[in-house]
Image (cartoon, rainbow, N blue to C red; front, top):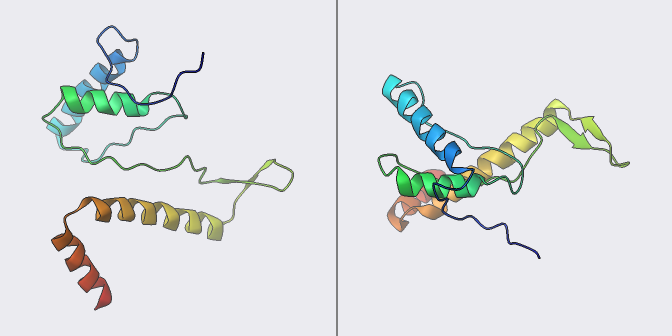
Length: 126
């Protein structure tokens, strides 16, 4: 039987719930020290990243969340015509970084209210 890989709120009995608890503790320590302001959660497809974040958002309302989603990208490798991985050059890496930045900005802009978007448009046109 196939199961969809959709995010779900984890229960305390789920094996992945311990990750939520550990992440909450680490975030509190990092924020208390004032060293970390942004956190990224990475992992392979189907690992449970979205479920962990969904549960963390529901259980830890003291944090502010701004979810940004990026496709899995290998910054230092390309795929050759024969399917083998090969190193990418500096220009290709710069193009990849621009795509990542564009994706982040696009998601930030489309989440905001129209007045902010309008102000950004004016700034970009000037």
